[in-house]
Image 1 (cartoon, one colour):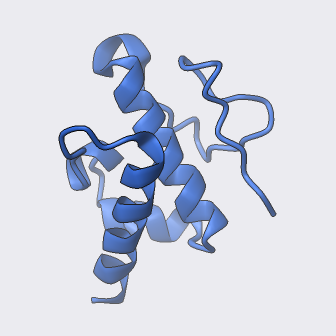
Image 2: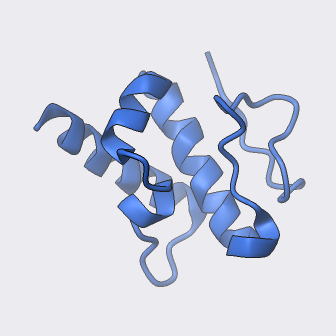
Image 3: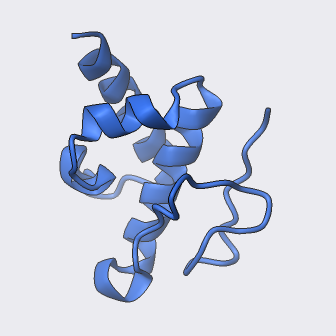
Length: 93
């Protein structure tokens, strides 16, 4: 199953992507760039085989961006790759 990040629509998930429980962040509150990073991390995690329950377990009530902060200059795909790697390590620990 391939998930698609809809970067053209930065305020809500696109129709080709599914987010459990509407987890997309409010673009006005966080900023459109942060919203793209958050959605990219969720899409990558789900595409890599993590279940939404496993992701929520690792996040433990935190937002994705709070659990795995964006590094300066990190684009959404680079952030997603790193965040999911860190998430898998945290899940297996």
